[in-house]
Length: 77
Image (cartoon, rainbow, N blue to C red; front, side, top):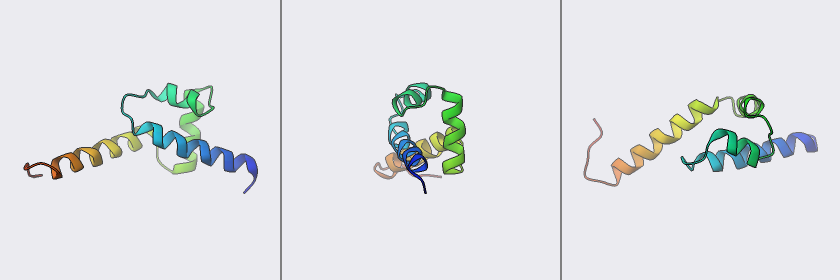
């Protein structure tokens, strides 16, 4: 692994952390992690994680909702 790829992986990891805050917009996260173009950020994210952004966000929201329900008296049907 060269330094460029290592930096890209670090930026994607940071983006994953920022994506967990549902208030953040994808284009803001792209910019915060050093990508000037949200479309390019999306392409790199998919290349490095094997998952597109919308699927990653949807999966995280589902996990968060499940955790919230498990911490209540409600049942998942």
